[in-house]
Length: 280
Image (cartoon, rainbow, N blue to C red; front, top):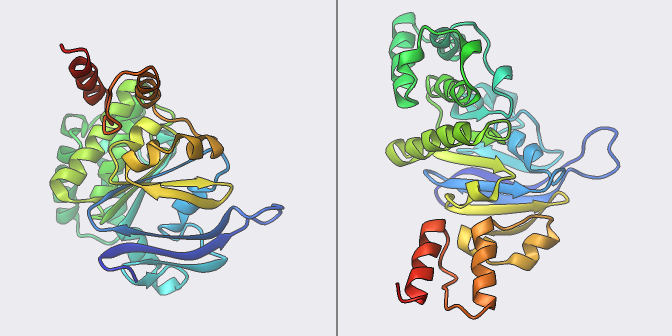
């Protein structure tokens, strides 16, 4: 096992019943405590299948997945694994199970057998962490998409997980909702040291990760820091992915002769480089 690895994936393969090709082929990677990891890939690349392996919603047909040493294939480990690895899915409406926000947040701890007094404490703390305390008694269906996802995250926090997995959790949100969710996730990582795994098609979201894993046709084809991955434009294109818009602009400026550094990995950093290059 990789030292300090929270989740270890070793030679994992998986094929859906009735499918002619494997969804995952010989995938090996590890996720460390406290880091933010982005898993990116085109539609059908296997990233959501891999995501569901992280808390045993799917089990590997080949290889092994462990969470803090617990094998996901062993039934005795399932409850503890799913408590430690919380998942937020694409459609926020599918995750809200009651009509009132605070009841929804308390649903998970109640099913875990947490005493009522402790549930109230956890619900209050979780809503405060996602900045939704003012909506505790509101109707869940009346919330915006971003607010619903934040409530879904609060419901997971009330179960006290160690890992937060977002399976394209911003895909159905408008830009404001996306930023609400991403801001909440960044805060949880920064202030609580929570491990975060983001499955996304939005390359801009992967820029804030510590490491990026690129999947294509069920295989792991590239991994590294955002700078390392997004500077491999040819490999990204082979994987049917596009670099963030500002990275493409940066490369076009470099090709045109402007002395802009490849280290510019944000819009602000690129703006500073342009100003410096122009003597402004």
